[in-house]
Length: 121
Image 1 (cartoon, rainbow, N blue to C red):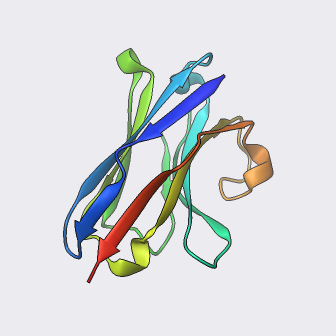
Image 2 (image 1 turned 45 degrees about the horizontal axis):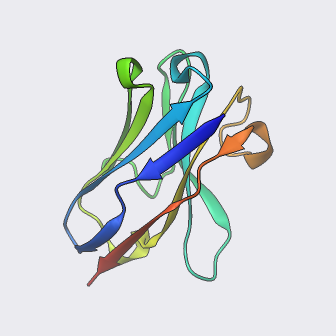
């Protein structure tokens, strides 16, 4: 199983980016797919998840600004990030698993390599 994250970059505060996570070896619609992030000097934290059922969950810090979605034909999950803030600067990771607790990292079996998002003020 491989997860390939992409789409990171440098953006000004208030701008938008869309991250992609392309999966191979597993069908994303049969598992929960999530995004986590690690900001400089901080622990990795949960951002958003789309369950196999289609149910969505978001961290409070990104609700109303970020949207997670899935394109089954491309076996890819996206994270649309709008109204970005400098506090969103982090390496973003995608992960896949049969998840019970969405924010628990050990519930995820495989992780992507991460893509860096930098938001300038």
